[in-house]
Amino acid sequence: MISLEGGIFVAAVLLIVYAYIGYPLLAWLLAKFIGDPPHPTEPAPRAVSVVIVAYNEAARIQQRLRELLRQLDRLEPTSELILVSDGSSDGTERVAQQIGDPRIRVIVQEENRGKAAGLNVGVKAARNPVVVFADARQQWAEDAIERLLENLRDPDVGAASGDLVLRRDDGSLAGVGLYWKLEKWIRRNESLVHSSVQVAGAICCVRRELFEPLPEGTILDDVYWPLAVAMKNYRVVHDQGAQAFDRLPDKPRDEMRRKIRTLSGNFQLLFRRPAVIVPWRNPVWFNFICHKLLRLLVPWAMIAALVASGLSDERWLRVMFVLQVVGYAIGATGIFVRPVARLPLVSTISSLIVLNAAALVSWFVYFTGQSGRSWKKVAYDSRPTVAPARS
Image 1 (cartoon, rainbow, N blue to C red):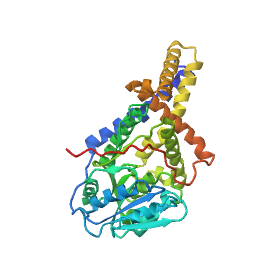
Image 2 (image 1 turned 180 degrees about the vertical axis):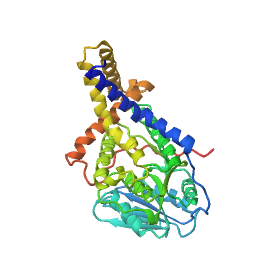
Image 3 (image 1 turned 120 degrees about the vertical axis):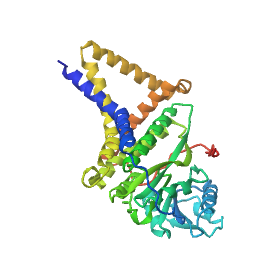
Image 4 (image 1 turned 45 degrees about the horizontal axis):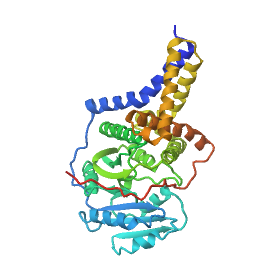
């Protein structure tokens, strides 16, 4: 008969395995056997409003706007680019206006109210039936908007997400890139069955009439409004052909800070829209629970597994305890010693520790009211993000 410590250890490991392996495999199997890709029956929309919310982006906003204008050249002349300057103090709006293209509309928010408020302003000002969301930092493949719009040829598709490609880093964050590939794989499989529970906020589009205004201070805008679309029985699909290119933060602490904020946004979402976990209200409630909420429990399961095995006198649990300690030591070394972090196994373990430490801290950050209202940026160095040419 299994002991109490053994039962706790097994239950904790099963939760961890299901969150990272079991659910992704289940999503893949469902997509394989009952998946249904979009059915194009209508012409693709050709008039769009691109919305960017920017805060102190004067150094790169012109390059970004010119790149997006080249994409609009391929669409209807009524397409437009709406820049919402969210309390910028570096002249972002002035630099943008210097381009002098009539398709650019600049809206100034005097106060830094956050990205959610900026998105609401941008969508309200949009004149076209499809709104495309972009960020100031990334670079897009030259046909990204057109590929996004192809998904809307199916009238049942209400929104589409592009594919954010992260430049591979040779440090401890390379494992985060691997995690991101897994995340995108899950989203693609979810959207083949019905809808992905999240879009890439840096490259996505929505039918304007389906966009639901975001409560000010919403952290996970790229989850909140896509779930609203799915709850109206429209599909939210992930298109890996519509690509944006970015790079990981240079320091693990920056990635951890970003993850703490985004993970705390899951708690905020539950309190602001509790219907997302109600089966008869949300057609993707199961995906949301397995994809988003279970990951918030993983760090507690990791602690439970470590403590249960450490307190047991059973030999197999003592072996498990030693293996866990060794694994955490390897991961911690990868975080603080760069040369060691280049090893793939070390990088993966280090990233797992960073991500779950962020998930653990997010509990305290949210429930102590420290997640904050404003939109915080992670610092990146000045190296450009280069989009590879299409083959």
